[in-house]
Length: 106
Image (cartoon, rainbow, N blue to C red):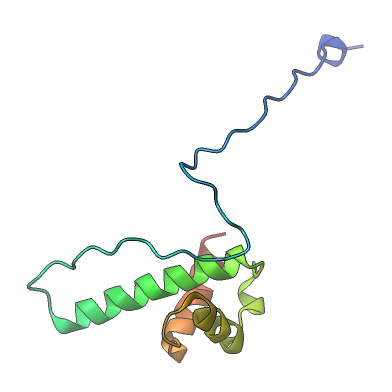
């Protein structure tokens, strides 16, 4: 019998949360403090930047609510999640970006 099989397994340590306050899991999203955007960029940059932020917020909210596959995130699901967390309904482009984030974050 190999020696590794005779050694007892070390007891796993209890995990500790690093959160500074309790995290409520019944609400999938809590807004964060917004910082001003840098001045002097072209308008298209701001539009794209805000679209990415919205897509990230929606992807996080969907993951928190149990939608883990991009195929589960239809436009209706994404829009209902947006309503739940209090953001304007996303466009088709933003919905596509949400699914892309969920696909490539795996």
